[in-house]
Amino acid sequence: MHSQRNSKNGLSCKMVLQAVGKVLRKSKTKPNGKKPPAEEKKQYLEPEFTKIRVVDFDLKELVVLPREIDLNEWLASNTTTFFNLINLQYSTISEFCTGDTCQAMTACNTIYYWYDEKGKKTKCTAPQYVDFVMSLCQKLVTDEEIFPTKYGKEFPNSFESLVKKICRYLFHVLAHLYWAHFKETVALDLQGHLNTLYAHFIVFVREFNLVDPKETCIMDDLSEILCTPAPLPAPLPASSAPTSSPSPSSQNHVTER
Ligand SMILES: [Zn+2]
Image (cartoon, rainbow, N blue to C red; front, top):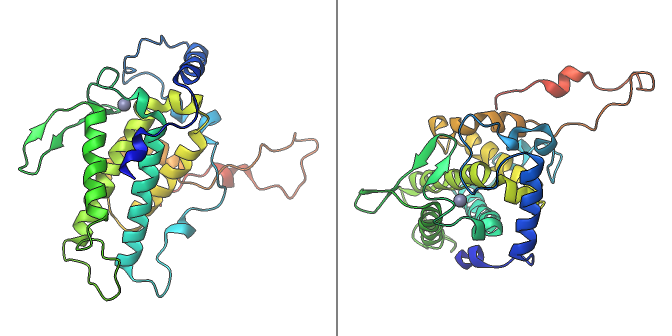
């Protein structure tokens, strides 16, 4: 599964670069390969992009612990799925995430450093960081002692803390995708998948308190938009709108979940 990051998605690099060029020209940003400054408008917050999802139901229904399912089993199954999906989503733009374009693992104004097994802080490029994340996650979710799949095998005491660690790292990858690779994601027409994956992930980690809000706050602006149910289709003009249409306030109200 780890090798998915290097798989091709059927579109040639040239085609994607042409499409990225169009997006860049449209947004009047110079295609110089450099990171946008922090004060630059975040393209991923524009309504034309945030309204795009691949599902339109309340994701909260998907994440609540079903009756008669063991909590650890539920966390293990969802964490493994998120690892695979985020790995796959990153693979779609991995050829644009290089040591030159992403010299550090950035998201908003944050630079993430990798801490090795001895706790030594290391500055690394984004692709190196993502590689460390995916290798670690792969190692953990396939370890029978940590994510047991055989009947009767117990989860270790450290299970919850390891799930939290995996989710924290996966959040860093999602944040980097938005911050550094949203234009390429739009060029590939995959923003609906990214938005849906991100919203599902955030609703899940909030439900089980798996990532410290201090960690996720850098993306709160996007989370608040995406974690509300998908916007309804544009209302009809006032003259022809049926009187039973939902009030605008019910669509615009943002709630903390
Ligand atoms: Zn990158």
